[in-house]
Length: 532
Image (cartoon, rainbow, N blue to C red; front, side, top):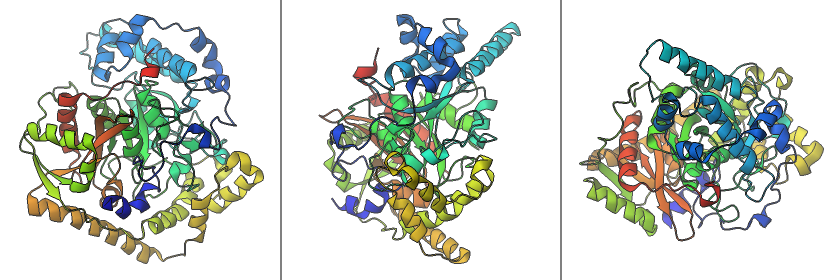
């Protein structure tokens, strides 16, 4: 398959391919060197909240009102007095306690629980009571009181930020990442930290996606032993799929949101690079890195996008643009012929054509993007020490990649069972002048933009349609936004995502396309082992 050969450099860098023809996602879990964390104890994760979480009894009514429901549906139920934000938060905490670790269904998707989660939920309840007392209009299209998980490379001042690395277990930072402050200003409940492929999957090279020394091996709720989680935002995708939170925030350099979202049948949005602040996020490449929301539906994704600080309006405060009018009629999409080997993709294209879209088949010649690994190596060599110098816990001042590698060698069985091949590649990368490196990066971006824009102009295209993270590398290099939405399941139960790609800074188009496709197909199904 030509497209796989062309994109091999991207499939194992900062993400994990969801294509079983490239990596063996059908491996039994016994091929993994490590399953359970050697650093975390289930009860310790909950800290002072443990007793209340254990004693909480969720009713069947609560399950009906919360599981798989959208943010507006949950907000409406709370506003009508059917349950509180505190009960909502406890409901998710109890599910995490029951399913996530040390049992036959464990997913290892959570690294930390926020000790202030219930306090934040109480504050949201107090705000709601005051708003009702004042007769204020209530919005159901808000993250206020909604429990949100963060990928554990995003700084918070009340939990360590480890990137899954044992070396960073003491990295309790002095301030939140900018996007976390944005969420808190909107009243969101920061529920905890999600597991990830260690160092955002730019560390070991040969390790499975979803593995970190701190969090252990994240497992997919649709097939714990048979289906890959995708990465690097593995815990974010798994936790949303299993209903451990309303939503989660992931990060992407090249496919790290799109891959786990597709693999776990959730909606993942990789915005135009630069849409959200990267301040306070442990980096791979400040040139390409971006945060993005991972949710069970497009509406929730739009609500999270607003709260994270998007410079454009996806929905209004009152939710008047609720995507019910979203349409694909007349939209012109470029599609790659080789992807038609996937029958789910063929069916998705049939549905989209029936909805009035125009599909233009493209040849399978793709830009090679030679030097992408060089870009990541050189950027992380510079960007990680910059993070340590000002945004980490002061303990790590002066640290760099070499210092982390040296620390890991003290107990390699626990800290690096799969080695640290990619970190070694960073150290071995030849130094290049700042001027030459900037030219190298911008030349690559220009080349890929020209590739997309040539098709756009030649065929009057609005955007492109791909699968999972198969075109993530090109979209990343071009700064193009992408959104994946559940496309269905193959005969073995593995989820796939239909991925829309829009031109630079045309992110709003993605929400309408994805919402229209979601509305007419409704493919997402909650994993059956986690429905109780």
